[in-house]
Length: 207
Image 1: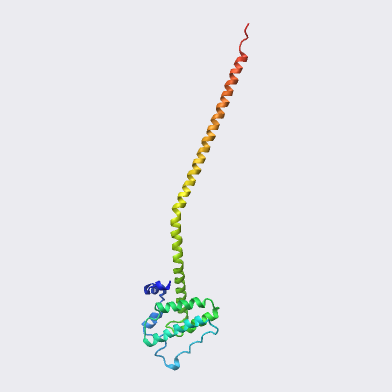
Image 2 (image 1 turned 60 degrees about the vertical axis):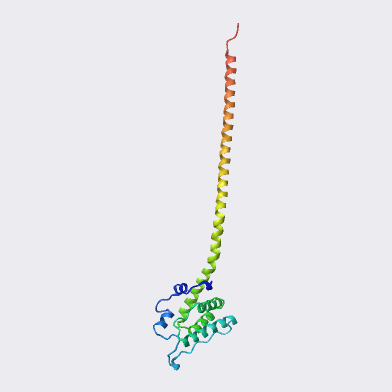
């Protein structure tokens, strides 16, 4: 999913408020990486938590080395697509850790990066949400297409069933009506026979 991200997409997704933006901090002239500070005024970076998985240690080292290189080169934009990809991988791996170790990893990273810990965590979470959305997009599209293919057939089948039900109901009504007419006819004939029989009985006697 990260390979498809453009710089514009990421800028729109990961834009921070002016007081939190790592880009604005560097563009406004503040040296967030620590260059220009007197050596004795630099804060000692926190240490990494012990017992971190080796793959996570490797990604943390990659990000910190990139931060040092950006400091030396005076780059104004640190979080390019490659750095976002590394940060996303770190976010995925730290989700398997307890909250204390996870917080320690981000505190350590923030000491090398042009943003504070909270901003870094927010960026990582947004990358995670964006990446998860990209993973869901394809399955959802496939589901939508499958429904689109199935719906005409299902609608035709439904209409056929409705038509068959209506025809069966109509045929039953006709049959019931036919039976009723036949019963009425039989009753009418019986009444006629009764009337004729009564007339013969009540007729005058011959002398």
